[in-house]
View: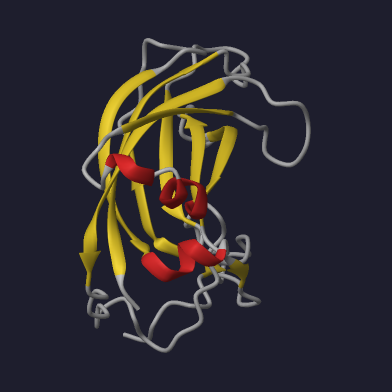
Length: 191
């Protein structure tokens, strides 16, 4: 399968939903292709923008050339905000852009032209759109499929949630002093 390079510049977002109660939001974006979670890239967070973050961050992704034409792949942009360590980061909203839309809008302007576009930010799950994400993109030439990475492409199941975290399960063994059960990652390779 051939790929194409997609250079995406995330400019800004406006009018996002306020999800932090006690602090100002420091929003960042995680961009990935829906068919390949390993392709995710993250922008730096904007600690000053709050509900209107500005990044001007450029990311480069390899996207499937043929799959985009079938409409089976999409560009997923997840907006998150940093929070204090025990609470963890929180989702603000998401944008899903079919790759077919990006490829079809290429038109007669040529592959090297930069296109500016805006999409509504939808909350995770359901609800009315809240905010707008502004970005630009440019499609590059076809490239051959990347070689598989021998370190990450091993035969263990990859139970990874949408944010790249693996679930931990409780181990029935208890410590001698009666502490709580240990947490074990069931998918970690043997040492």
